[in-house]
Length: 271
Picture (cartoon, rainbow, N blue to C red):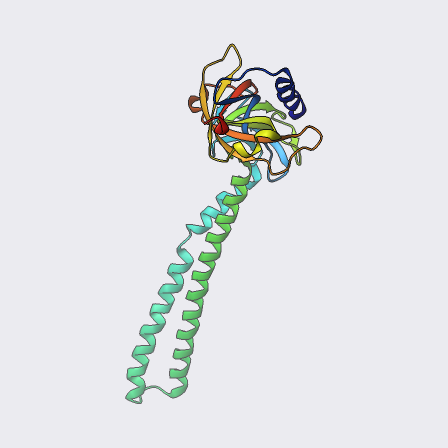
């Protein structure tokens, strides 16, 4: 594609076409802003693919799901453990009792009604009750962490869209095993990229941030405004050309990608 654009640009210059006054016109191609092959972060068997070729998708929209029966069962067990309060309540009740018993025995000990050995045993039981209660709280915290881990495992089995765009191609279907291969190809077409190859003679006239007029080929037609985002810093010595990328808004996806177009830059030398 890039070679053909260079050829058209050079051929236009050789033919000596008369451009409009104070304007530089070249041939270009309208392309997607980004094309992504969406796969799965974990291997598994596909349970469902929710979209197909030509469907528009939003960022974070679920696209496909792997079989997850076992993982969801583990998630439910982990969730149930986070809701269990009986052990904490029992240990707390035991601790409260140990504290009351120690306070009562301290009063008796001060009046010399109980020996030191009994007082020491009561205090030791209170400390053990404190440690058991702390252990119950830590187990609760571990259960919550296990639940979060199980939840993340289940989330990874649902493949979501990383961008707003359109499904270009669907590679796999339910029942197929996925590991390293993509499931879908998605193209972001708002904004669009406009790729154009220019002769080195206009290199210093094209600046990042400048605007240009874009005229898509028939039957689409119309006139649109794009902004220069990239000017190549390396000249192609063989053809004496360099590449320029412009970015063009495409709200409502009114323009398809893949169109040829005319790109008209203002002629800074003609001003």
